[in-house]
Length: 371
Image (tube, rainbow, N blue to C red):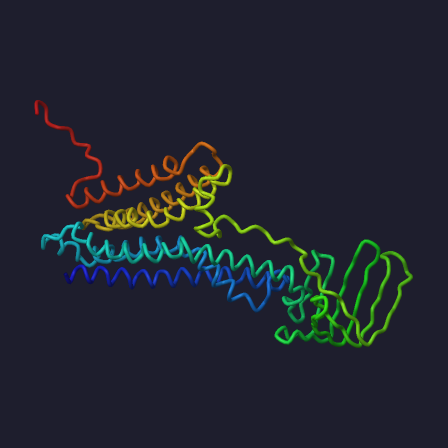
């Protein structure tokens, strides 16, 4: 009982620690990309942290199985280095005695991974896509950063402000460049603010105390207009609303399209892929239990490298199978995906059985003659 509680406790603590480290690396890498997009005016500045959270939620169903697998390997490796596995074997405890605590870990991790795979990750994809689309269509200048030239209107306009308060939608020392098929225009204003027309529901950028320059490139004749107040309509619906990606669709919607001709293959592959992220867990836990027990005198590095190679081979081949199913009209998920799970499950069971019975994986000895 003490052994089982210690195994569960150490695996859970190690899983949390490894997951936090991996998430910090992931967040730093993604944050740099979001900051660059915000500086270019592609996403709103005040939505960076929300987009980071949504991006993390999108990949949690892929990250968590790897973290559980690595945590079990790290715990068993430490037990091997401290000769605790030797004490277990001398006390009559084989790797099979860890199946019960591993089953508890499997239930906990399956609930978490299933929640992300079937609900939270698709929700994050939908919300993230809605935020980016809303910014591109309805908030033309909300991503402007003070002191940075920001492109808008699909590259046909440039904004620059010296100071900006995006919460109040107030800007100072504004420079705006815009072009169309006939002429170019430059507007310089002391201040600007956003307003919404109650009659037309349109949104305008109202500039005050400035000058507008209009002309044709290459023509020295330019028109100069000084103004006290000048309104520029902020374009909306510049980008049509994109369809929800397959990985962001609701489970009910996928079930409704499951038997349809054409799109039914995509819906079936996505549902089976979401379920596969949970099915991977028991297979990888068996692999970890089989590869984590290292006999004294044997190197630990080859076993760890083999374990990680098996994981990446398993998940990448499963992803390739899903991609093939989506492109094929004849290959079913039962043949293309679940056969793969069955093969890896059989290998994992065989490896675990060999470790439990202390047998070599491949016996090269020949039986004596006449036997």
